[in-house]
Length: 298
Image: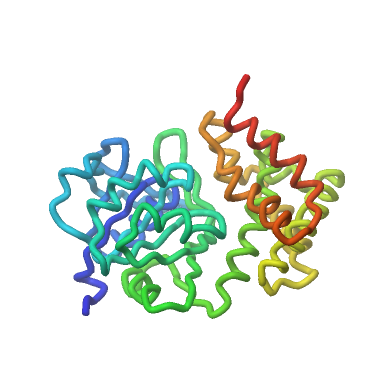
C-alpha cells in the first residue's frame, strides 16, 4: 500500500485545473510528472498575492515515459480526451487510478474506452481557475473536489492529503455531479453573449437563466439526482454574487476560438431529456447555437 509521499503521480493537461492540482502537490513537496502538448520549464499558479512556481519540465512525448503511475489526474478538456489517450496508455497499468477532472456527468463513458485497464474515478471540480495571458493560472477560490464513494477514490484522497485541494467523498455523487452540470450548462449562455458573470444581474438574462436551469433540473431529477426546487435560484444567485469579471472555461475557449464542450455541458440535457420524454425547448435553442459557435461552418 502506498503512502501519500511515495505515490507515483502524473498530471495530464497542465492547464488551469491541472496547474492548480500541480501547485497543491508541489507546495507539500509531493513530486509528480507533468504531461502535456506544449513543452514548458515550469507552470505557475497565482492565488491572490501568492505565486506558486511548479518546476517542470512538461513532458510532451508519451513514448518516452518509462514507468507506470499509481495515480493519474486527467485534466484535459473532454474535447481533448482522445488526443490524450497516448498518455493514458503510457502511464497506466491495471491498478492505476485515473481521476478525471472534467466537466459533465459522462466522464466514465468518455474516458473508459481510452483507459480500459485503469480504475477510473469521476470528479466534480468546484474551484474557478483561469489561464492568464502570460501563461500562468489565476485561482479564484478554495480548491475542492467531490468524488464518489468507491475504493479508488481513497487513493485520490490520500494523494491530495494535506494539500490546499480538499477532497469530499460523497455517497450521492450523481446528485453532486448533476448540480455542477446545471451550473456549467447555464454558463454556456456566457459563451453565446461573450460576457462574463456580471451579465446575470440583468433581469432579462436572469429570467432566461432561471427558466433554463429549471428545465435542466427536470432532466437531472429524471436521471435520479436528488435536487430541490431551490437549486436553480441558488445557482443563479451564485453567478449574481460573483465578481462581474468572473469567466468560465467555455467562455475562455470561445474567446480563443477553440472547440467548445457544448455536448457534455449542454447537449446532455437535450439527449437525456428526449430519453425521458421531457421537453427541453430552451436547450433546443441554446444547443445548436453553441454547436455552431464551436464547430462552424462559417
